[in-house]
Image 1 (spheres, helix red, strand yellow):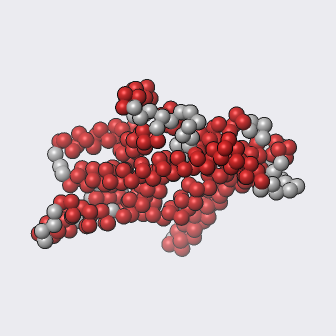
Image 2 (tube, helix red, strand yellow):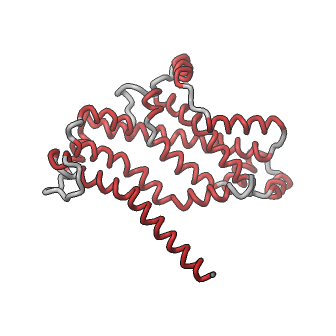
Length: 277
């Protein structure tokens, strides 16, 4: 029976790997192949190799609209980096306090965070608030939006992982004369590294690939993001599918590489935080 189970597990892993390769690899190969074709060949929408590999398609996409895609990459990276920095600081502190401090107030806050995971954002009231503050259609306004939308998820992950850390470590730090800030900065926060890596990678991919929120809260061509760039290129290159595929490849590669290199940290951070509630 045990030998059958040992054989069954690798077989399941193999089937899962093949299915994942077909589900994600084939579409990516299709986009990459058609991005290197001519306009006529890409219009056929098949998996045949092109007569000539046209790498200049990528150069044409990069140079379009005064290098809009490069400006979009800079804007998306800035929004992503600053959003992640704020989230890590705020959510790590929030998750630690929610887990270590009991009481009805903390339970109510936890309920509100769970509600934030389920309810969609209110578009018009948010636009009105941003307009009132004078930060509508600005990069720093977009940063605040992304932070607000991702706080519930990140805080709950930090809270779950904090439960796996013994309280005795904090008590020992207090006995040695450490302040609360120093204890968290030099003892607790380094121990949160696995879940921090998970949040950084997952939130980076989510924010970088976000289309809906920049469409509502960052309109116009003044501050484009990568996903809005693809949306704008659909109108310009609607009949040039090879250029659209080239644009999609350029946008897809950075988050794909980030996910591939850090997928083990993602799994370890999520599973470790699920050990205790």
